[in-house]
Amino acid sequence: MKIHKEGYRSILVAFIVFAIINLLAFYFIASFSAVLGWLIFLATFGLFLFIISFFRIPKRDHHSGETSIVSPCDGTVVVMEEVEPDEYFKEKRLQLSIFMSPLNVHVNRNPVSGEVLYSQYHPGKFLVAWHPKSSTDNERHSVVYRTGGKEVLVKQIAGALAKRIVNYLKPGDKVVQGAEMGFIKFGSRVDLLLPLDTKIDVKLNQKVKGGVTVLGSW
Image (cartoon, helix red, strand yellow):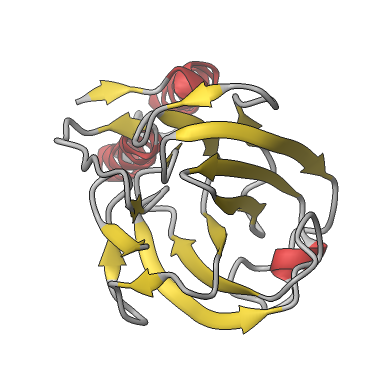
């Protein structure tokens, strides 16, 4: 397991805060209450480990397939429905949404191999990620891939806690399925807008793994 580069600064800040809190607790609390001092240490150490784990990159064998769409993130499938797109596409698409809790791995990956046609950041609100309007009202970054004559839009959506979306792609890039496309910090959601004839291979409330679980095919 590795630590993602997007976590270096956050982990450093967390370590400094951890060290300051425990130094103060040692000098001002532990001297008259060792138990309270240990409780503070254990609580802050647990939080520090949680922040480190949030930026983890587990070792995995990623799926590869020309006609398959793999999950761009870890999480739970929460939406599968036909929608009228709010950007790029003019015709109806099949929306598949994945909710990412703070406990999930938060690296985002390319669901397909192909060419990037569109990459656009949108400022917005910070509604909870499962809110129906989070797809259109929240801070988000949208990317459109073209592969084998098909086009797929992937939307990274910020949640109530996630206030920093990172995306590495730009129009014209040639990308590989399963490679990193970005990162969202501290819980959020990813939407995919797929062609209506896509054969879906997952169900609502199913747990999925980024770069591994096949969401569908054509």
